[in-house]
Image 1 (cartoon, rainbow, N blue to C red):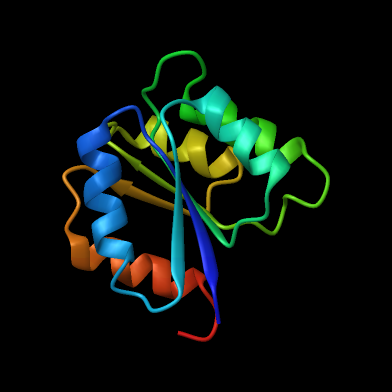
Image 2 (cartoon, rainbow, N blue to C red):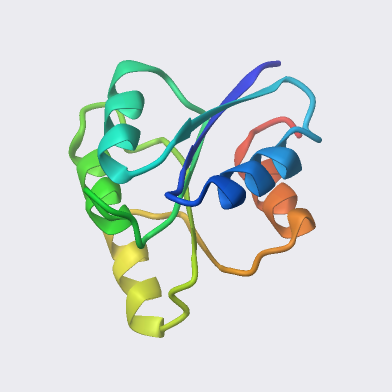
Length: 124
């Protein structure tokens, strides 16, 4: 089984860390976006099995991106995991209200990312 995961984060280092963790899952291909606008373009022109989204980004932040994804037709099934430095309960509640499925606060461990990804990528 092949899985396609979208990573949306303005930090190249963070994208690289997340990609490295996810590549331990057999059959995973990674697509990266550096901001919410690029992430939205990719998610509306391709099909993904999982999206990992940061909140604080230029151009369009992660919360706006989650809202946009959830208003797209056929996008309500896409699992969204927020991975951010924003640890406040209000941020977490807002992200979950907008449709995020999971909320992880940076710094995250590779094993944490892997466990959450496996939870959403059915059959693992």
